[in-house]
Amino acid sequence: MANTTLRWGIISTGGIAEAFAKDLLVDPKTRDVHDITHKITAVGSRSVDSAQSFIHRIGLGPSDKEDVKAYGSYAEVYADHNVDVIYIGTPHTFHYENALDAIKAKKHVLCEKPVTTNAAELRALIAAAKENNVFFMEALWTRFHPLALEFKKISESGALGNPIVLHADLSGDFDIHNDAPRDIPTSHRILDPKLGGGAILDLGPYPLIWAIIALFEHPSNKLTKPTSITGSILKTPITGVDANTNFTLNFSEADLSAQAVLSCSINTNNTGNGVAIRYEKGSIRIAEPLYRPQSFTVTYLGKVNGKNAVVKEEKRFFEYIERGLYFQADEVARCIRDGKIESDVWTHQKSLLEMEIFDEVRRQGGYALPPGVEKVV
Ligand SMILES: NC(=O)C1=CN([C@@H]2O[C@H](COP(=O)(O)OP(=O)(O)OC[C@H]3O[C@@H](n4cnc5c(N)ncnc54)[C@H](OP(=O)(O)O)[C@@H]3O)[C@@H](O)[C@H]2O)C=CC1
Ligand SMILES: O=C1OC[C@@H](O)[C@H](O)[C@H]1O
Image 1 (cartoon, rainbow, N blue to C red):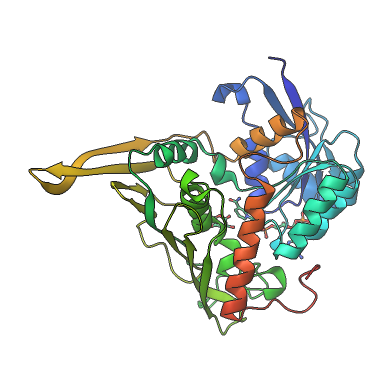
Image 2: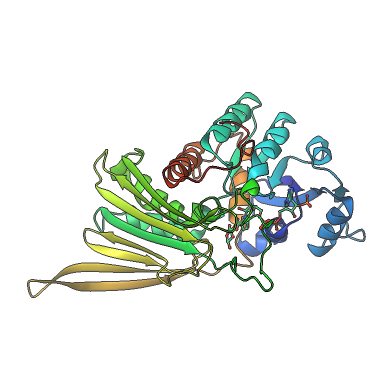
């Protein structure tokens, strides 16, 4: 098969943009991928110095054969004819306007999670992507990991029966209470409500993605939305963002009767339990961290001497070069090559479901973002 080269323009020069750019530069052939190549042709930042320093940090410099442009604005990247697709790594509350600007410039877009601050913004972006005939996807990288693909196969094989209950938590202690000195300032995107701070928008996508794969995507569910969403939020008095959020989803519309119990926190660490899914005939436990697990254990239940017992247990391990952010980039490249405006794996519908759930959990928990932060309501 012919090799397709996708030319990336990177918007912003923060933590995840750097990790993503470095992963893009991992030669696909070392991962046994031969149909696509990724090339970074432009980096845009609010400061040209920052763009230049970013290019240097990711290992592409003036002496490099690659011609990478450093721009002191995002708009110049959208206008660059040597860019096919824009990667957006700005804080959540800028995703809508950055993605819209890129789409209007007829660029394809891969936008960090959470794709927007609410469902209304996302609906507007999906409409804009369709109108401009460009590819648009939320960067839910975990969905593209080989572990997730293998998990899905086993989960849907029928060997375990239908799923019944899923528990998943992703937490991180960001040291929000450490006053002397506070580890993160109140202007940090995790604490600042103007940047969509708090647990639900930042960490919530990860427990949710496992519920989406195991329950929403399960053939017995027939892609029906949760029949109920129940959310509970505990806010931090420091800035009023959600520190501890729990949400429960029931899937009982089609041929499934299953519940997801999900949670995320910014002031304590993970539980140590990862994801646990109990099925009619066994269970699957996925190791932490939920955004990049590297193993899962499948336990099969059966009858031994007439009693319920574990009849088989299998542990599967997965190794990735660097962080594994390139799997989603490969999907983007193949979709664009094939003329698609949407991934079949992480669809617009799934991102929309995610944002609708977060809207409802924030509504029930009383976490409203400051006026003007949500650009479409
Ligand atoms: N997929 C994953 O594993 C991860 C995803 N994320 C997601 O990526 C996004 C960014 O997170 P992260 O990289 O940690 O954030 P950082 O704060 O490290 O970087 C954000 C970058 O956005 C740009 N920016 C534009 N406007 C602002 C503003 N007003 N305040 C701060 N930065 C601004 C800056 O780049 P510049 O100055 O160059 O314009 C900044 O460096 C979030 O939406 C988060 O959810 C985060 C971590 C991991
Ligand atoms: O996407 C993410 O994954 C890892 C977390 O630590 C981070 O806060 C989040 O943005």
